Amino acid sequence: MQRLTVKNNVNPDAAYGVFSEDELTRSGEIEPHNIILTTNKECPFKCVMCDLWQNTLDERVDDGVVAKQVEDALASLPEASHLKLYNAGSFFDRQSIPKQDTFQIADLIDNYETLIVEAHPKIIGQSCFEFAEYLGPQLDVAMGLETVDPEVLPKLNKSMTLDDFERATHDLLEHDIFVRAFVLLRTPWHTEEEGAYWAKESIDFAHSIGVECVSVIPLRQNPRHIYEAFIPPRREVLDEVVSYGLSKQKGRVFGDAWDDA
Ligand code: SF4
Image (cartoon, rainbow, N blue to C red; front, side, top):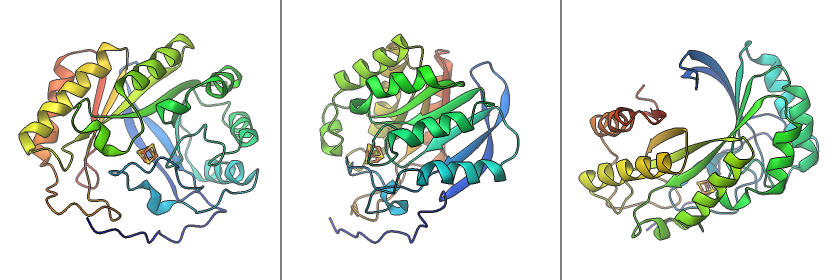
């Protein structure tokens, strides 16, 4: 496995992604969602399949910097009821987004109905629940379930077990916070058939523990971990897995087709 570590030259004074896209809401309507990808310190977990590090910084930003990124980004976005605030890590990781910034952001987005953030299951705790209580919009937390394949999950360096994921989901739901799960399609240790099988099993597991929304992510090559035998999953397989998830009628199931939309 060859290892490359060159990051993109991101600007700490600006979110590295600001855009809007339509998505199906919990109530069954397709509505615009504003999306802000903040620029901050790299996630400490360093999962082997994750390529989000490419748009991160090596150092923690000063207090107020991420809140200002969000304020500037909001000013350039169209009106919408739903906001995704993804930080290439965990929203409640204080090295990524200082606590004060999270509350400043809450004050800035009081007019939204929904806020979706991402977090590692092990970071879910009191700081998340305090934030949800303070927040005006409904909070949804997206977490990487990745795969329920017991052979492969430990190979991802995620530092997470299925029990960790289930516990975090249970705690979030107890605090009236909705959960969405990211499920990988075809890791480097799966054939195409195995990849589809384990993605379907992962969707079923997520639904069985109360996850309302699942997003299936076809694995991409990670410049830090070049998988020699890597073959990206075909679009037809993604469609098959998403159709399977939808057929269960347990909640929303999305497929992330990357640029092949
Ligand atoms: S926890 Fe999430 S953001 Fe952090 S390295 Fe793993 S997949 Fe990437």
